[in-house]
Structure formats: C-alpha cells, structure tokens
Length: 460
View 1 (cartoon, rainbow, N blue to C red):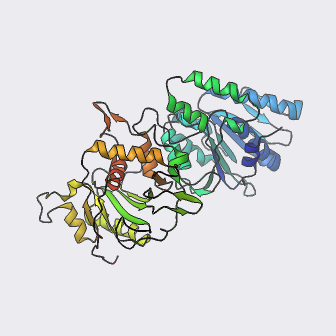
View 2: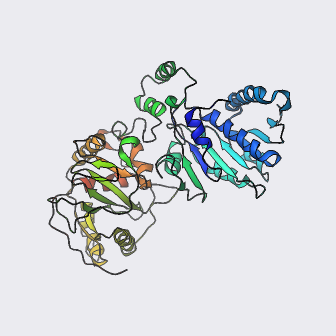
View 3: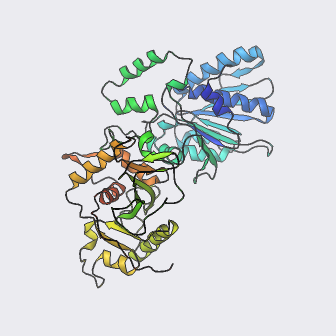
C-alpha cells in the first residue's frame, strides 16, 4: 500500500498521541485513517479492536468500499468481512468495525464495549462534541496496547467551531498539545489536496470551484484547509489562520517599562471589555518596534495579542460567570504579574460612568483593587472595526503593521472569526452575538498615546 509523504508523516506520530486530521478537502484523510487502523492491527494482532465511525450509513459506504479494495489486495480471502455487522477480521486476529453514530440512541449499541483505536471521520458533521466525547469512554484495552483516538474533519462544517477551538488553535501543526477535555496529548496534522499525489489536482480544483461558485470563503476553506474561515462573517475576508495566528510566546521580549509610543522596545498594555452576566474579556497587547520574535519578523506598529482572560461559560460563549469587580481584578492582576507587566490599560468608556453606588464607577472599583484603566475613547464603532479589519488583512506583509493573535487565545479564535454582520447595518457587528473579544481588541487598537500609567500595585 503506497503512501504519500503526508500519510507517512502521520504514521510516524507515536501511538501515545491522539491525532486530528484537520485539513482541506482532497487531502486523503480517510485513506490515512485506514493506514493507521491497519498498522494498529498489524502491530497488536488479536488485541487490537478498531472502531471507525461515520455519522450516517450512507457516508460509511465510501470507506467500506475502500477497505474491500485494499484488504482484498493485501489479504485476499484471508481477511473476512461480515456485511451485516460491518466487521473485518484480519488474518492475525485484528478486528475493525465500521459503525454509525448519529444520535444518543445510536450510542446504545456501543455502550459497555471496548476498543483500542477510535476513528471518527467527517467529525465536522457533528454540531457539538457530546456524542464523540461519550464514545471516548469505550477506549480501553490490554495495558500493553496504547489506546488512541483519531479524528478527521474539513473546515466549514456544522462542527467547525468546536473542532477549531479544541484542536486547531492550540499549537502549531505537528506539535503535541494537551486537550483539557480528554487530558490527552494531541497532534494537529493538516493536509490539503496538494498533499495528495494520487489525484488529478487540477481537475479536483475545478470540481471544488464548481461546487461552491458563490461562496469564496468556503472554497478557500476547502482548498487551503483554513480554519479561520467563516462563511459570510464580518471578518471572513480579512482573517486567515495562516497569517494571523502565531505560536504562543513565553515572555515579552525587550519590554518597555511604562507606556509610550516613542520607544525601540516592545510596548504593552491591557485592553478590557467589562461584563458580569455577559462575559468580560481582557487581553495583553504588544506593539512591535519593528523586531522579531523567534524567526518571525513583525513590522513596526504591528499589534500582537499574546494572552486572554475571558469569564465566559465554557459551553455558552455569550454567558458570563457573574464575577464581582474585586474578583475579576484579582484575576487580571494574576495575568499581568505572570507576564511581569503592570495591570493597566484601556477599557470600554461605559465603565467610567457613575452607576449610582457609593463606589462611583466600575473603573473606580478596579482602581481600588489595583487595576488601572483609562478610557479607550472608542469613538464610532465603524472606525474601530475598519482599523481592526485593515490590520488583520495586513498581517504578513513585510512593510505594513498587522494584527497577530496567539493560538492560546481560545475565546478569540472561538468567536471573532464567526461573528456576523448587523442585518440593519452591514458596516457593524450584530451585537446579539458573543462580540466581547472583538470589542476588547477594538478598544486596544484605538488607544491614544497616553503618558505612562502608574497603577497602584497591590500584592496578591
């Protein structure tokens, strides 16, 4: 069985790591899954129990035909297939089951059963991860066998949001990272049609172009495997994972002690959008003096967003956790001190309004708790959004300041790329959405050149 360079690279990822095959269409993800299943059975014999899952039986038929072709070539009649149970039994005792999982009722047929390798194909068809998470409880086997999950998906499907949040914007491709949900180490292995030498690539492009002639964002997602694409969204045409997402950094390089635009060092400040019943969002922004971090150069005045603190319900992205200002201030100070910077920056003008309590304003409460904010003077929303869009689009240009966001800013990547336009005003966002991250970034981008902020520091 001949493999492409991409497939060989996936196959050498140790079995101790789970794998997310998350590229564009035509990257041969399904065939790669078959290669992983076959290798698992070859190495572990009758102890290997593989479950391959698709959402529908109709979708399962394509993979079933691939297995019949490949196993027929490799094993002839020595490999036996039960078409009623959709089960392969290989000559060495390896077991591969082709299953369907569309609803909680479908899960009943897997309840209590054990598998050593779970493969979920076309996971983007699942709008939420609950069924796949439940299936993970079936991963168990002999302690001599490494258990594993492999998930494959294209961007642009119903499950785009949760897949991108969990597996794409965690680390750069091919670099292991820990998934908090499962506690497992994962590797994001993207591919596109360019990684598949076994197809007529020129003809394949024409087929994809013909299938979505009026949806340029979806076409880009399918061709480039770009998970920052959001069809019809406000930032869809200007945000691109390959340009705007940067690897997390561990420390601010050569930072400026204070806040001034006239410096050869890296400026830094907080930007904050307040919320209680709605989420609050706080980011650390860096302003490049025209310098590099690692091997990547950032033109002068480029903005890097390197960390976030968002108080949202993990499931409901537009619901806050109800934190009081003192509690939130403590969390903000912890984030600032982690980066060895002062807890100071800009915030929504609204928090400076007297809200009728003895404390005066929310900004005053923050100040008493050791966090100093100044007005963002956000002006009109349209100007702020236009600046944000322009800097997102200019990222990657060697002579233009761009906007770059670290992959560890999960709430940003889970919300901003997918925010839709206001149906009554195409130049603005629909404020019914989880726009808290976008608002915080907008405030930070329009900050004026204030004199150095000297907040009152309070020990934690």
